[in-house]
Length: 344
Image (cartoon, rainbow, N blue to C red; front, side, top):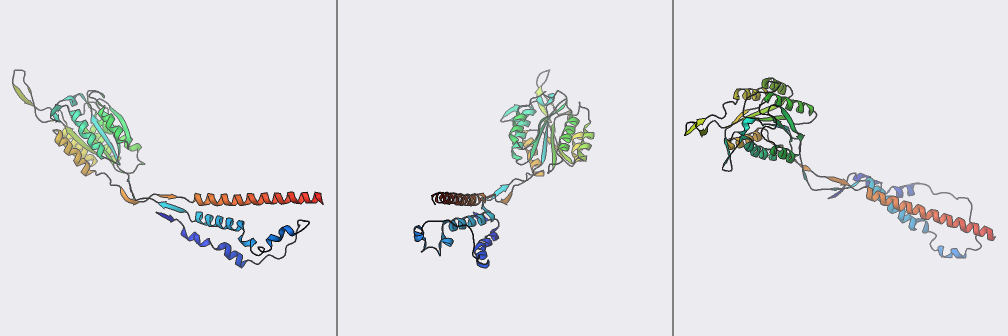
């Protein structure tokens, strides 16, 4: 809908009339006159002599220009439809283990057995897609930790680069402490950004590489306000072929250091989760959604676009044309005067 930002400016509309009524009339003026041989050519002006000064074309052009100037000063604007405004989300880092043990095929996805990384990609991709409004970053770690995607609102890019990751990309061992330290450093660089600082770390083993111990890294995370949710991934039982024939049960997650992951979460105010299959992994990410809900957009904002420049531009154009016509008339009269002086 249309409205005026400053409607009270319209009170200035009658000012020219007020000045005309209040100001005293000009007294007789003396000055140069134009010599003409006869006044017969001015006879047609006699009937209009009383009104020409008030209602000639200049009067109407000036009146319309004044109306447009006052309208421009009142700032006409168009108010758009109500929009939802996205609010500042969280800084959410995902740290995914790419060590050699993630190649263990103890998960099922779509009715077929897959390795742990493939299941993680499928579940984490859905999680990323749901985090609308959050700034998401991706850390891949193995023997070393790498920042694959800095914090960004571009969820599609994070998804693509996660799906392109492969086992062994960062080495065969597991540097949990380095992954946390890298997240701390990136979060610290984003201190000016508003919102909570979250790290979701997924691993299937224990810290076997890196320069920083996991607990020390967790203490650093606590100091910068980084909350860490740790996920231990891997089945608890897996049936494999025996060397002597037949089948036997093994624990493919024997190397998982649950005590350290639990302590990391406790120190930073997060939680530790255990994912033994695809369903439980999906439930964990949904639970993280509940613990760290996506901020709902605020409604009630209406975009406003100002259009004051249209009446302002038209007023300037009218005044400019009036000034140009007046100048041309004066030049014409001057030319006539010169011709008459030469003739006389």
